[in-house]
Figure 1 (cartoon, rainbow over the protein chains, first blue to last red):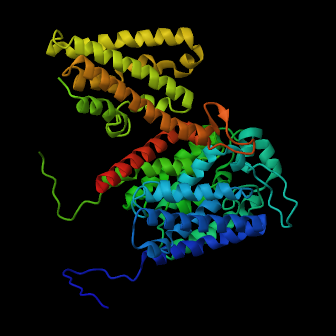
Figure 2 (tube, each protein chain N blue to C red):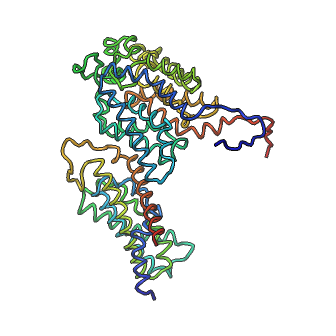
Figure 3 (cartoon, each protein chain N blue to C red):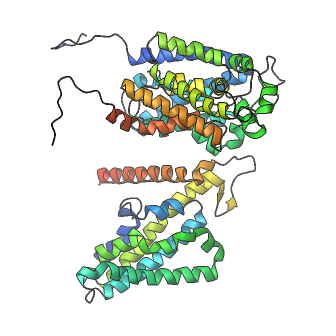
Length: 325
Length: 204
C-alpha cells in the first residue's frame, strides 16, 4: 500500500536506507575477515560467526523481554551484524567462545539497547565490548599467536606495539619490517593485522560515501604528526609515525569504528576535531600510557565528547543574526 | 500516639519500598566504593545502621532544644560522635575490616542517608518512631549493599564472603570489582527495582 505523501518545500529524496548502509559496511569488512581466516585459520571464522550470531540473538532476546513488536526488522537491520563482525575483528585469534559471547552481550545489551537502541547509543558498542573484555580478562585478551598458513603450528607471539612497550624499539625493528605490517604477517587481533585489507575496505566505504574523509584523515593525520614529533626528537626510543599508523587498531579504528554515524559528530568541523582528538589520545596512550594500544580508549573518550563538539560546531543558520543581550 | 500499623510501615518502608540506595538514591558514594566484596559491604552496612539508629534517637530526643537555624551543625555534632565510636571500636576489634573500609568509615559523618533521615524524619517525629525509621533505613541500606556486593563479588572474584565458588578454571570478570562494574551493577539494580515496583503496582 502506498501511503499519502504531503510535502511542501523542496525535499531531497533518497533511496538510501539504514539497511543498505549497514550492508555496505559489512561488505567493506569482508577483506579484513578473509585475511584473518587466511592467517589464523578456521578459529577466526568461528569467532566471527559466534560474535555475529551472539549479537543478533542477544538483540532479539532483549527486544522480546522489553516487549517490543518489531523484533524481526530490528534484528535484521544489519547493525547487529556490523557490531558482531567488529567485535570479532577486535579479539585475539585465541579468544575462547564464552568470551566472544560475553563481548556480544555487553555490546548489544549494555552499550546499545539499554541506551535506547540504534541511534541512541553514546558509545560504539563493539568498542565497549572490547574494553570490557580487555579490563576483565587481561590474560585471554592478550594471548597472541603468529599468523601461520598451516593450521596447528601457531606460536605465541607479541604484537608489535606490545613488543615496543616491553622490549623496546630495537627488538621490534629486528623482528618486523614495514612490509610485514602492511601485509599483516604480524601478531594481533583478527582485524588489526593486515593494513592492506583495512585500506581496501576503507576506500570502498569512502567511494560508496558511507563515511566521509574527515574523521579518518584527521585521526590518522594527528596520530602521524604527534608520533612524528617524538620520533624526530629521539629516533632510538620512539617508533616512526608510519609504524604507528600501520600497527594496532589505528586503521581499523579510523575507517570502521570512529566513523560510526551514531557516535560521531555531524558537522564537518566537528568531525575534524573528533578525529584529531582520537589521534592525539591514541598517541598519548601508546607512548606514555599503561596499555600498549590506545585506539579503543581514545575513541570511547571522544565518543563521550560528541554532544559537546556538536553543540559548539553547530552550523550557523542562513540569515540568523545574534542579538547582543 | 502511633498505632501498630504506622509503626510497622515506618520500619518496613526503609527496607524495600523506600530503599535508601535503590529508590531515594542516597548514600551512593559508600554504596559504589565499599560493595566490591560482601564482607566490606556488610561491615559498612552495620556501621552505618548503628550511626543511623543512634543519631536518629538522639536528634529526636533533642529536637525541641535544637534551634531551627542551627540544626545542621547540631546534627553533624551528634552524628560525628557516633561515627567516632564506630571508628574506634572497629579499629580495636576488627582491624582487617577497618583497614579495607579506610576513609569510608569517617565519611559516614557526611553520609546523606544519616543526615537526610535526621532532617526529614527524626527532627519531626518522636523517639520511638525515629528509632524504627533508623533501623528500617539501616537495614535497607545494608540490603542494597548486600545485593550489589553479592553480584559483584561472585562475578568479579568468583567467591562469596571470600569462599571460592568455582574451580580454578573460572576466570573472574575483573571489571566487576572495579569502579565501572560498580556503576553498571547499580544501574541494573535500580532498573530491576523499578521494574518490580511497576509490576507490583499493576497487579494491585
